[in-house]
Length: 261
Image (cartoon, rainbow, N blue to C red; front, side, top):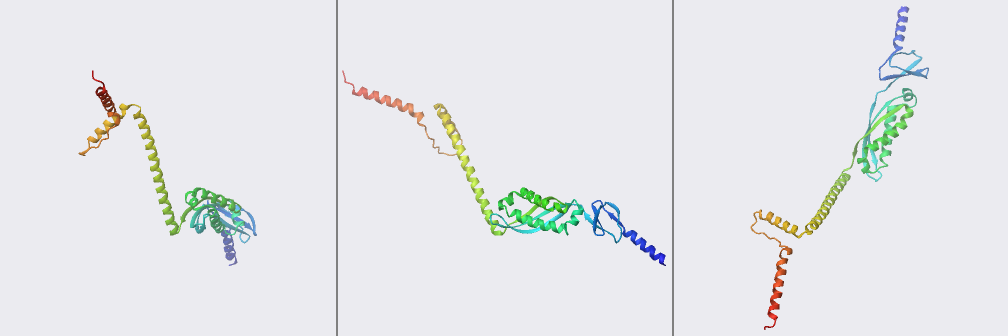
């Protein structure tokens, strides 16, 4: 009977001394409360009642940062949430240096998110997320380095505005689009005026060119179905006739006023 009990105790101690660590796990070993090394992966042996092993997961952890109320530098209240990707790179520090590495990283991410975004204006939050993500990731990585944690990436997911600010931004965007349309229209008018001036200079270099242009315009108008055509007659076309008429009138006056023989 005693041999059976002793054998059972020995088997229990033997099985309790065996630990199996997966490829992504490490075992932080403490002997009589003192850190004596990190073991794994695979099968490791632990002295019962003397040694204790704490498993640490080395895979990347996806941490969802809860929605935070942030006041931007231009005094706009927004709600922002983010996601943090991190992993344990030094298991012994993650167990010895901090009580709960996941909770500590979560709290640090929340405070860092509010601190960094509070230093920027709303337009920067909406248009420069990549730079803000990099700033938050760098701060978190430096702060968690003593805990044996590596922050790989930080992504801001949503920047939510209240209804009043949404309407104000919609009006601002509409005004900006109207301003751009007016600027583009004015720029087009300016370019068109410059081209017209250049064309006028080219046509004015030779009187025959302006005459040909008028004839072309007359041909274009004649192709329409309109029964009435108003065509401006350039003074250059009738100027020779007027000069001849003035010469003829002058000759006639000289003839009438000359003395008879």
